Length: 318
Image 1 (cartoon, rainbow, N blue to C red):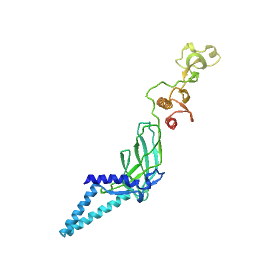
Image 2: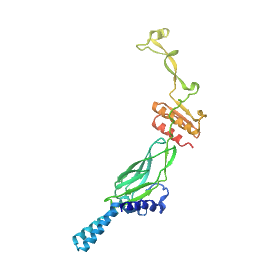
Image 3: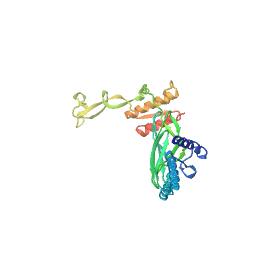
């Protein structure tokens, strides 16, 4: 009997929301009310109902007032639990959605912000992509619910339908509702696994830094440990302190100028993957990077925020 009840419940969960106008994506905020909350008995609730019927028939047959009173009390408690299950969802609001950052192929953390309204909501469950998270929302308060969204490719990805349900408080009734936020999240491109480092054109990749080398750059005050052959004796004779010859030599520049136009031999998706890898390597090494794309140019910068801005720009490319 219980498998039949579960099949009926599954059928109702699929069909009842499809018969309403709430099956289409909706803009935020989304509020749950009586027209979009559905309730069916659980398997345990159906069995409990059969037990109450047997108790009622037996108490009436044997004229047992105590048993009849117990049956009525249990029946009233079960009906009250249906109202409590309904109220656990009624008045719940989805007010905002926040997304994390993830590369294509990795789960993307999505935070749902729920507000409680004028009464608390206990033991609510949110289902998305075969994962469930339980939460409670206090009256006039907010709760963050984090769910992981599976990703497969870069770019904008729309959120799937999310099921909110509750069996609170006795597990006799299953109350549920569907929400479908009209919102998309941005997925970063997947970097290539290996490849050449970025090539800096000509002398633009070199800079001069004052240090020991072959060419004299300047004179500075003598410091303990400087070789005597570097002392500028003639210039020191005209000053009160010893002066030492300082030298310069070329050193690799820290900035990586990443340019879409420098990869003409690659297909567009391969270019995006290579630029994503270079951005990741620069972020790991703490290098300054700039990025040129056909529809956007990002100036030099470093740090997590600059990396995220560049990866977002790559993810938005057509």
